[in-house]
Structure formats: C-alpha cells, structure tokens
Length: 321
Image 1: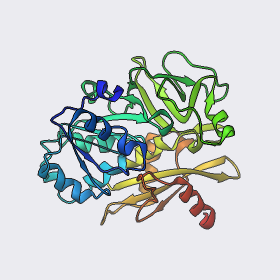
Image 2 (image 1 turned 180 degrees about the horizontal axis):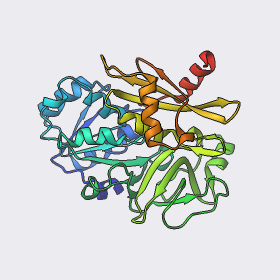
Image 3 (image 1 turned 120 degrees about the horizontal axis):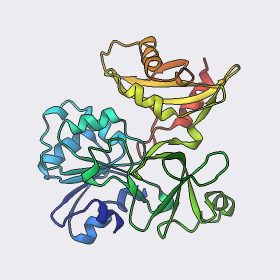
Image 4 (image 1 turned 30 degrees about the horizontal axis):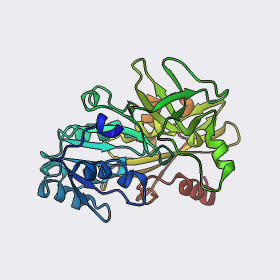
C-alpha cells in the first residue's frame, strides 16, 4: 500500500514481471499490488532482454520493475533504439545503484525510470523517488515510503546524523522483520536499538532525498581514506566503450588496500586499461583511482542479476596481479 501511494498502479495497468518469484522483489512490489487492484500481470518464467523488447509493444506493457542489469541488458539489444516503448509509462528500478549513464539511455527513449530502494528485511520497500521528481533527482533512491522511518548513522561511532549527511542507512517501521529464523546472533547484529542496520552507505541531501552510495562491506580503505567502489564504477560506466564495470578492494603493502576494476566492453570497442585509468584520474581523487583494470567477457551474477563481487575477489585471490 505504501508503494501504491508513491507509484500508483492502476487497474488498467499491464505489469511486466521478469524478476525471480523466489525473491521478495519478484512479487511483493508490483505484482502483489497489481493483483490486489485487478490489474494485468505478464508473468515471465525468466528474464530475457530480447523478449522484453517484444512483450512491451505486443502486450502494451505500461509498467515494469527490474534491477539495473535488467535495463542494461535490454538497452544493449540491437533493436532497443527502434523498439516501440510508447506504452511504458513507468519503469521501476532497485536492487543496486543505477548508473546515471543508463538512466539517461532510457530517458532518451522517453521512459520514466522511478528509482527506489529496499531490502528483504523491510518487506522490501524503504525509499522511492516519486514520478514528479524522477528527472530532477536523477541517481537518487528517494524519500521514505509512508509509515517508514529512515536515519543515517556515523560509520565509526554509530551516532545518528542530522541534516545533509553520509552514513549507514537505518530503517524502522511496521515493515521491518522480527529477525532471522533460528539465528539470534545475526538478528542481534541487524537490529540495534530498534533500527534495522541495512549495511548500505547513503547520502541525504537538504530536501530529505537519499542516494545509495555503496555497501559498507564493499568499501575499502586506501591510505587511510574510505573508498566506495560505486563512485568509481559510475565514472567507468560513463565511458562509451564500457558496458559494465565492478570495482573491488584488494590488499596492498603500501596503501593497505587499492582498487581493481573488472570491465566488460562493447564488441569491437577500441579501449585499453590506460585509457580507462586516465579517465578515472581526470574525475576522481588520486586515492580512488584503481591500480589495475581487468577485462572480462561478462561479470559474474546471481539469480537476481546482481554482480557477485565475492566471485571477483576469489578470482583475484586465485590469479592476483
């Protein structure tokens, strides 16, 4: 119901559902609301980007939800630039920070992407950018849903922060879970003083909009400075030859940790590691610039199409520099 008050699903809507049904985002965001309101749901057994481009005009799909990879792989299809997307009034994205370059790609096709944020432990809706702010707040995850409280905690002291700030995102409200099944230790770590610790780093601006920056566990420290991979990945994504990128922190004798970028480039693209590193040097502080770039045919992904950085770390440990 909170989602309905923020991103209205109409009885006349046709909802395209491509996320796995075992995941809370696969049924508890758009489909459940659509069924409750009597709208139509096109339920797909798996995500196929070519089929998405076919279904949108054929079924006159009006709204859908996906993770960033859903929209990335769909936009990479040969027919994307000419596909009839005129029926698609609203597309929701969550699960990970959305590269601004990808937001612009869909915006150029006149598709309004509404960004949001949630997690299973919060059922999952926490933040959403209302459609009227979507273009103005590009890259933001939004404001809290009705009946949901959020706060930012200092990453070192745990103190709650006021005003514009950056810290770990905390959530409180009737949507937050009671705990992990038969795992009191994990529950105690996750629920602190009535707040759910999300493990995500966020920034809050003066209007109360939140931008998700990275996972706390993905942050690394280089020369005493906190480095958030998502910031580096955004710079790499902006390069026209780059399809996607993922950055991890690896041990370094001098700096403690340094960044390594894993990059997938477009077929036939003429780009090398030096060019990408030069781009990072132009746009980032020196301590944030990766020390190495590794090219891959594809990034390892989970069933939810999220990048598996644990696999990238394992690959680095096995192969190394």
